[in-house]
Length: 333
Image (cartoon, rainbow, N blue to C red; front, top):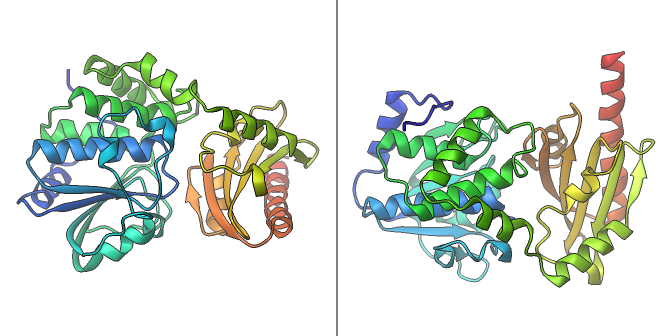
């Protein structure tokens, strides 16, 4: 059955992408650092397409993939640029799920003056950096966009590709509970199941298979809980000996508390360097908040990196969040 195409690709865009992929030039495919399920799923699925087209490719992230995705077939192909930097420029580069080109980190070193870039994304930060830009903020995930693109290009979606794409939609919709869970996203998810994605196995591995270390770190993060703005802002975090590398989803614990409208999770990743995740349970656009600190993401889920001490991080961020809540109150009055 043909997918209902929310993406509504024009034939000209599909033709541009088909021309972009013509020839056997080795293609670099990258996504953002701190990769999540959509970033990793998109990368693996696009690699599956290139393999099908007999195009040589390199999949790369300027980071390590979280261990909970190790079960996905093909993940061993993904090159961690922290351990194995790229040593040449590529004529053809595909960037997936990265709202700003700065979010690909050291992969940027592989882009030269003659490099052609295909940018496929569902974020919008105003940074349209590709020769071809397939950007649709109505899509729940970049994986959803890729499924529609594969259909338009006549690509066969294998079981492994279906599992990768389902992972992207599953995680970016928060197990189909976020406001971005559209009928089209559900339709694509259903098609992916029919193509071989095992929803139960994928959900079990991603959400119900955490390590003891992660469970203890969640306990430490919850122990750091601070409430601001009369309980409307909840902040949790990890630093020092409590910090770990795999913290995807930790912010959801702060966001799940009754009456909390804005949730924050911070994690120290180096001396005076923090990763900050934001979630909104109201009409405050946290992508605008993250953008103000050099980050980005979605209206409901965003993040950024902060260089400085924890005290200044909290002071600056809480001030911004309280102002957004105050403006919201005045607007609705």
